[in-house]
Length: 249
Image 1: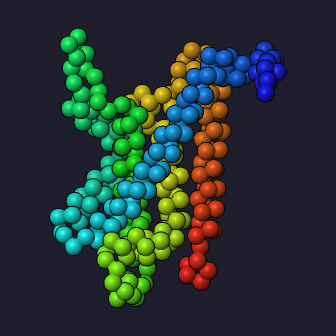
Image 2 (image 1 turned 180 degrees about the vertical axis):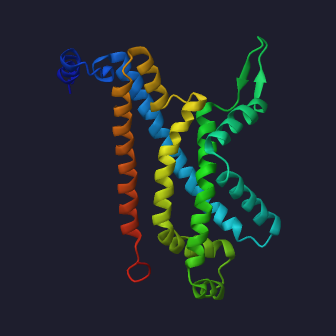
């Protein structure tokens, strides 16, 4: 599909009104903003999936019979819930990142972990700490008789968790999980601080070059509202699909 007439309309709009949306009529700005959009989507998808996995595993480890394991999980939750995510990101990228690097013969320090990977790791652990508590609350809401029935049928602790506890707890936890994942989508913008080339980072480059801050900020607002809307819509569809009539309201 030839979109040239559309791009030219935005060029005309700039000439007629001064609204400078170069991301539409300038091929270079359009491509780098689109690349930033794709990077944001990839970052958000990776963080959403990883944080849910962390929450599921952490909730299971919280019920461990080994006290050191329970204490380790509790320490992880307290650390990530009670420190700012930006400080965590700087700690991972600058402190741990320094030790996970090597010096070349030319005297250049090369990182073994990319800034994108650090953003995924840090933000997944940050949101995962909240997800652990969300899933724990869901597990505690499952009637104890259900667990006793699983034990009577010979289920091991892991099998009972995977096949019985988790599916029921997941349904109960979805509303709270929905809120946390929406917050995570918005929090991914802090990856700008370690030069991950996502939308905010690229938009900053564009408005620095083109001096069109108001236009780019409005574009970012519209896109992030749309992305959050998509996540909320998917989660609500998922919640309705998993609802057990008569089990939870």
